[in-house]
Length: 202
Ligand SMILES: [Zn+2]
Image 1: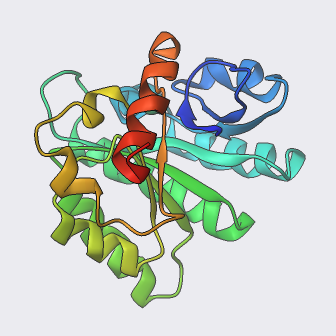
Image 2 (image 1 turned 30 degrees about the vertical axis):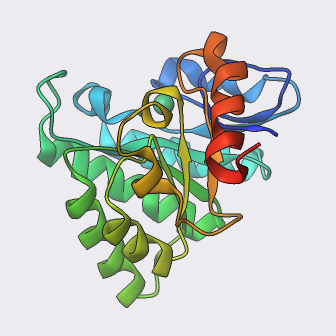
């Protein structure tokens, strides 16, 4: 099973996401992985939006197998990017992904509902790209709304050991929920074992 959201090259293969602009070269060079170009919402205040729009277009043209990410919304206090800055950047990522027909890796902290509103609006305008929600920890009711938009999800160790894991994840259909290591490659074997247990009772 490949790793559906990581920031490190891994023998399992999978999607390797940039966090800042400085990561793009490293991510593009990761052997056997799908590179994802983007700016993490925590760093939204560090980039010029017009420059990013231009560069993202250029890099996606040069790397036809690449996806977009990591982007999203984070309403926690763990960083200094405002939600306004994050929203602007999120739209640049979603627009580029739609034009180039790529998948977008989304991060959401205390912001799944707002992300849903943004994605629904894009679906209504026929400008919604494929979306992948990483570290998914919303309710099943919310998951159903994202599923209706074609979303896929991934979960890591933190989500898998949560007391609500069963009720959150057991009803997500086959082929829409996957494992991820995110920033903890050492957790991968345990993540995979718990993921298989949750999904297949193995
Ligand atoms: Zn991540």
